Length: 499
Ligand SMILES: Cc1ncc(COP(=O)(O)O)c(C=O)c1O
Image 1 (cartoon, rainbow, N blue to C red):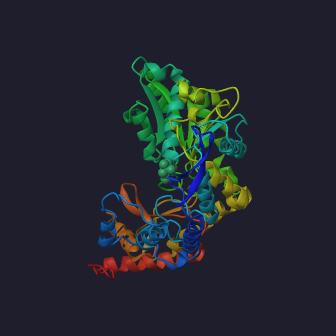
Image 2 (image 1 turned 90 degrees about the vertical axis):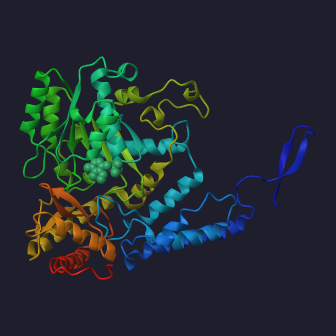
Image 3 (image 1 turned 180 degrees about the vertical axis):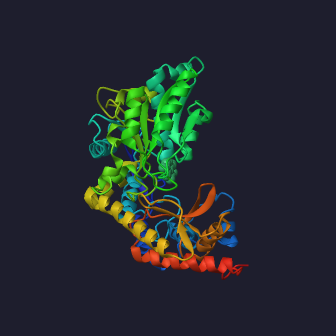
């Protein structure tokens, strides 16, 4: 039992008392266990290619997680064993090079270590005067530089782009209705209306719902054959809404749509917004960081004119989950949207409660972790040039996959390949049933994990190459496995191991 010296006020002397904290009683034993946990994860990442991409947790493993709340503690070593046996094998799989589903980043060992360091500091990054806040500000500066935004732009880490797009909707609302909307609500104003393409992410709709605008007032503007928002239709929709007495307040451009990776013509959207005096927000969840690649940057022409951008470091930049970000070129409007005057958040001229702007002034979160650290480690460890090269590399892998699909006798492309997303389909699969079956079979085989989406209303196979570990040779294996599944399904045979 550890005894520690504590100050005894009554006797004005030090007395000993049992250490009741949750810290280890035996630090050296803890150190050994902790190193074992770190080694386990280093091996896990080193040997990622040797494992299946994904496998479902068996019923008996799931049952382990239905146990009652433990009333007594267990040794850390025992918990590590449970983690290794019952969790490690059944993860999402997005660290694996053949995971190509949705838009999931691969993470890095460096990011993992940074996450552990952040947990050790246990900083609350809602505000106050400490170094984590400086790190977050430095990343805002780096982004402002990368986007050609003003240096005084404001930025805040959030969970992901869903949250960042919601913040954008709220700041745009402040822009058009003033800070007063926070107290008065929307009742007194004319109906707000905003615009995004039919390909924009569904979280924009949810942002409109949560902001009280209503998703019925998000106009879905049609796209051209490259899946980019059609400028003429946008102009017409704005004119029509103004004529009907509505109040246009935001245009959301997409820099990398979730379905196909298409990038809206951001320069044209910026022109339209400037002329119409409407907030121009860019959902750059994964595409905005393309500015780090000299090859990709020209595709994002016009991003530098956005009023705000939503993006995720946890996607293409490989920072471990979660690390979304919102950046805004109008710091005053940004702050006016969220700042609170609560007494317990008041600022002091000096001491820990000093500093002018706190992150809690820039978003809905108060308590928040040190997401900036893993992002800072990622930039510092690899450098922006190498990270930019990784983005271009994933696009190269996607182009290789595109070439394989073009050569395939079974598959055909379903959309142009702009960045790192390849959508394809079994030729003649008019309902998309075979495409969906192939994806499920691939998942269950553990060989590859693409996902599906709908193009022209039909389910197609979608491979998003986001992971820095994915190589062109992986695409040969992926297409061969997908073709084998297709042949089996079309011949009416069950997948190996199917019940
Ligand atoms: C274009 C786009 N916008 C928004 C989102 C939502 O981002 P998050 O999942 O980080 O909330 C995604 C997610 O894939 C996306 O691709």
